[in-house]
Length: 420
Image 1: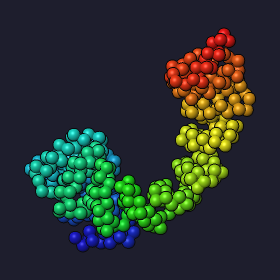
Image 2: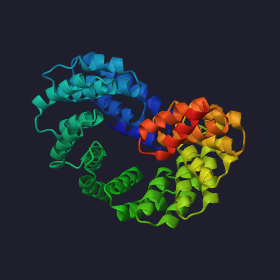
Image 3: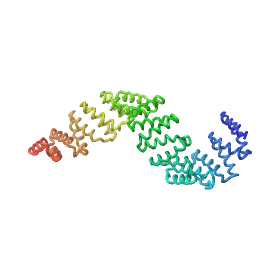
Image 4: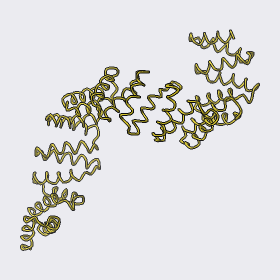
């Protein structure tokens, strides 16, 4: 085994060429034990081709050895050759001690292909052989979680946690927390996130903990954890929007807006940050800042209808009719239709005395607001001003049916009928 140890030492010191030269000696003249141990080590160092050659030599001597077949399959998996891996794993004899491991690998491969029922059958076969093995329960939990069966996943992870908190380097508390959170049990997930973070402070787990706390209504916890994450990794872009929301829920609007501005510095093309910042600015209120932020959101995504609707309301409230028309035209050019924008554009064209354009917009909006009294009234009064009394009479006739107790509409309809 001294030769193998020397090869490992060379690999550890980065002397790969020398190590591979000595490897050839083991391949040609080494003992079975030397070849096996070296194959294991080479797999760890990523020398898959060389490890495969050693395993093939061993399989010449032991063609049905399950452990060797599993190692060969693992190499195929690492090389991205899953089909060959399946063929190799299916050669492992059911009586072989490595058969459960082969079943676990097969289950994983079928799961990656989306063949969940086949994967589950392989895992249940493995469980029949090793009923108390936590790795199998963990694998079943992973399979359930991937299918969105979170209640089943929780039960399986809970069983695993009675024996182990780490499986193959994966934190089971974290998986448990994620499944509880995904299933809507936000409050119940929090203690598991805490345990996972006690085991290892990992930024994605910390983000999930903060986000779950926000969903559970623990705003101060969310603020604390999002800020902790911000200190560790200020470039974790997703935190800023949610931290801002946590501040807003606590009625700390200035802090929320400041958080949005920090987020924009980190992620200048995040339209949601500009949009949310615009809505926060309206709460202060700072309408100009709101408009600036919402315009930035629309510059990033000209089809961002939510931003268009909010900025449109600001413009309508301030009688900025040309700006209302600009927003409507922007959405139209992007082939995004919102009925309210059409209605507001019609009124805006009317206000700036571009009556033919106003009529076109009223006609377009009518498709969506046939039963909306306020719209029909606006449209009807416009038609009267344009001298289109017959068309106006039809609208006010509909209005009297929708609101039979409205005397004003009845009087207008009567007057239009008398003039016809």
